[in-house]
Each structure stands twice: as structure tokens, then as C-alpha cells.
Image (cartoon, rainbow, N blue to C red; front, side):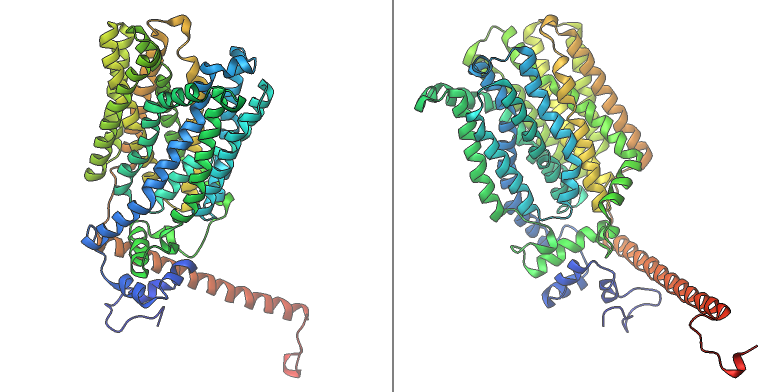
Length: 530
């Protein structure tokens, strides 16, 4: 029976069956299946062939769809820049200030609603929530066709920021709900590579669409860009509803045995995350806000993202080499290609070594050093080569840093959801101030941009080392240690329950005594009378 000591258990040990009664209701529902119960009661062996097959199955069913969704998210967010140079600013009569407002207003909505969005996600189905917001932003992208003036564009961009705010942190939360800590870095790198590839080829694609469809049906080419990208987003969103999973314990394309294993391996890593109790939104928010590590990670991410605004400068430095037009677009690709190779290699190694802090610190430090060299002034050719390695350092550190966030701020899930949203939302504030780091008045040397970026990189590295010093190395539990932690967790809950029951018993007696003293609700017998 559930909750009873097994006959063969050692004294003081909690039987596996007894753990069931302390699990959340949805986990207990998974374990109603005999096949799932059998898998749960078996010894968990990390890295077994069965687990590897299951993880590959999870990868196949989740990662490709999330990757495609992020490609479209990144393109939809950045295509305004490509549209601007192809007539958007002229047609809508936008001066530099008007265009800047249209850019920045997006991040106002993004910053305001990212935390509430992740709080909602922690209580809803990701397979519905993420495609739903994608469908809405796809429709809003198509709606740009009807925009004919600056104020309309500003209003649309504000609401677009609100809708898109839930996607990136929502995906980070979903991945951290499926993969163990030592598996996350490579998945974050694969997911984030979508933005690197989009940055490399997005401009070329946009140029082809705008030039090829200019005037078709009486519609400007830049409007066709929004229409086509919006339609692609809507189609993918509909497909995603049928592909994306929810959480390990409720996903239908896993067998009952796989659901049990997928749930158990996460529980053994973080026993507190799957207890029967569920925190309120307010409690999760307060836990995240009161944890100093949330704010340390936020400042670190703001620095990395601030240095990442170097991407605004890539076309300018390529222009210094004498390349123009389509050639300049092609020569903007190598920095992204170098960054992609270094990012995947470093993040895969981070998972292999089960380490985060140094894998984030080393590349961002090297990026800072290269920025200092750039600020001292080098030849355009040398500057281009250094640019490739600056980009590689920044975009290598970013996904492993985010994996570090979910590793350190792992439980409970409600806290993790809020913490990820805080870090990402305030980190994206870099897009607001980052565009001012590279004013055209500082060309061609851009000393200000390189110097500030170097400072950002070095500060981010220092924060990584501070957190590593305070929290120590990443710990990966073996099965024996994990089971011990679960047993302690169960024992603590039992002691808490016994104490609560005893307290209720004493409280009941006290109330009865008070009633008797006051003569309330008590029938006295002769012997009771005084």
C-alpha cells in the first residue's frame, strides 16, 4: 500500500511506495499505470541507454519546432530594420526620432509583460500558450500592411512587444522543465543558434523578398516582407500546437514508462520541485525578487546583451572594407558563422564537463580583451577579424550564461519562471540603450562603442566569478545521494505533518477548555457543577 513501510526496507529508510503519497497529484496520476510504477521503483541509472534513447526522442519532438519558432520570432522582431532601408521610413514620413520611437516602444511592452507572461505559463499548457502567442504576433505582423503613418506603426509595435514578451523566457522555462542541469547548455546553444543564423541571412532574405515583390498587387515590397513573414509565422504556430509537448508527466508521445523516468530523473535532481504543494504566483515572485542571485544574474545578462549590440555595428565595419550593397550583406555573414561554431562547441563542452561559470567567463573575457584592442585602433582588415572573435565571445557566453541561470535558480518552478523572466526582460533593456553606443559621429573608429563594450564584458565576467565563488560548482547527484535527499525530504514532510496534527489537537483541546470555562455549548452534569 502507498504510504506504508515495506517489509524488506531497512530501518529508518523510506520505501519507494511511501514516496508516492508525497508527490503532486499529477505525478501520482502518472504512476497509476503499472508500467510507470515499475519504472519508478527501479533504480535510476544516469546515462543509461534507455535514458539516452528517451532524451533523443525528446530532442526530436521538441527542439526542431522550437528552433523554427525562434527563427521566425527573431526575423519578425528585426525585419523593421530591413524594411526601413527599403522605403518604410519614407512612406510613413518617419524622421530619425520617429523611427527610434518605433524601435524602442517595442521593448516597453516587452519589459512590462515578460514576468506576468511567464507566471501564466507556469500554470498553463506550453503546447497551447506558446503557439497561441506566436499566432497572435503573426497576425499582427501581417497587419503592418494596413499601417500608413508613424503613430499607427508605434501603436502596433507596442502591442507586438507585449505579445512577443512571453516567447523567449517561456521557451527557457520549458527547456528547464524537461532537461537535467547538465543537459541544458547544449540545448540553449542549439536554440539560440536560430538567432545567429537569422542575423546572418535575414538581411539577404529580406532583400530578395522586397526587390522581387516590389509593387506586386499595388503593394510596396517592404509590406510584402511583413505579409510573407507573418503568414509563415501563423502556419508554424498552428503546426506547433500538435508538435510541442507540455511537461514530462503529461506528454502523450512518451510511453507511461518514459513519462515515469522523465519525471523521476528531474525529481532526483531537485526533490523539492515535484512536491504536492504548489506555490502561488505571489510567493514565486517574492522568492525570485528576494534572492540576490536573481539580481546578480540580471546585471550580468544586461552586460552581455549590451555588448551584444555590436551586431548593430557589423554592417558599418564591413563598409569600412569597401564593400557595398549585396557584397556588404555577404561579408556580414562570417562573424555570425564563427560565433555559431564557437557557441555550439563551447556549450556542448559545458554540458560534457558539467560546468557553467568558467565556460561563460572565458569567452566573454576574451571578447572584452578584443574590444580593448579594437578601441586602441587597428587596420580595417585586422578589425574585421577581431570583430568575428568579439561576436564569437559574446554569443558563446550568452546561452551558457542562461543555462547557468536555470541551474542556480532551479526550484521551485514558480520561482524559476519568474527569475528567468526578470533576467531576460531587464537584460533585453540593453536593446534600448545599446543602439546609442555606436553613434555615426564616432565613425570610423567607434572608440566609444568598443570601450563601453569592453567594460560590459569584463563586468559580466566578474559577476560570473562572484556567483561561482558564492554558490560553488554545479553539483550533479548520483542515484544514492539523490535518493537520500528524497528520503530526507519525505521525513521532513512527515515530521511537519505530525507537528501540524499535534498543534491542531492542542488547539482543539484549548478551545474546548475555553468553552467549558465560559459555559458555551457545554451540557453540565451534576458532577461537573461547582
